[in-house]
Image 1 (cartoon, rainbow, N blue to C red):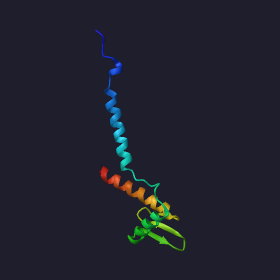
Image 2: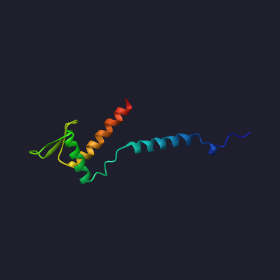
Image 3: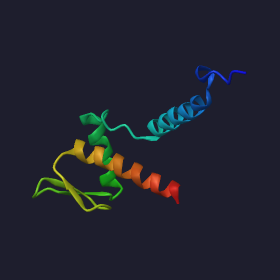
Image 4: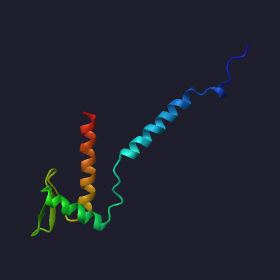
Length: 96
């Protein structure tokens, strides 16, 4: 008697599909930072200043992200950083 045809074996298909779904979940949960334009960045930074999360230092022409004590000279860089920093903290909180 002949054994099962190795071309009909689909046992690895399930594992591959599960890996693809996990990658899609990870992509969906990630924060997009490439879409931060100047107006969006300025609005976010203004909100962060109002919330005392960011402190402007006019004499040095920089912005200080208080929770991380990181200094920026660009509102766009600060906005992108804050989005990533927030996403990282949220991910850590979910893991706990």
